[in-house]
Image (tube, rainbow, N blue to C red):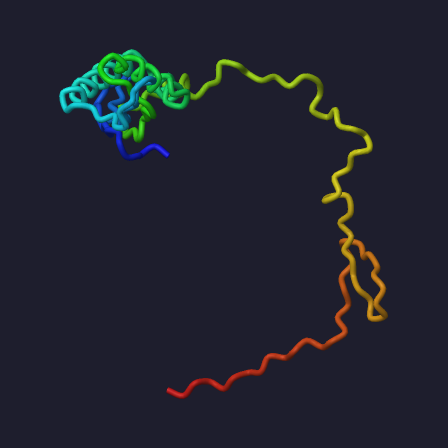
Length: 185
């Protein structure tokens, strides 16, 4: 549980432009932390400390996001590299805990370049299949296509398989359609 009593909550948002032209709005949330040998129950930060922490977060994120492409940014968001670095940078102003990038919005995208798109989504490691694709166990059979015979229940309760082409004989007579008289106008 992140939100608790007796600590300060610090929220910040940063507009940053990446190296490949994307503009992001990044929302960060952080909480103050008690020192290890602190006796006092509360860990509130002064408003000047909160402003200083926001400045450090803004400066760090704008410089780091400006150096990265979108793939690197997403990788760093998922690995939480940025939040760990923010925690370390702000430790000298006031100790922080649970620094989290709460939300990221894409405000502006660059114009689409087909070559760059292919580079982004092409994987560096190509997985190659070794051996034949038909190297299956000889005893393996596809049970779905093996038997196209349908099972049919006889009147006496037994089941028998009937081949695909054979049709079931109808015992009941089809219903005849009644002709309706034409509508009077």
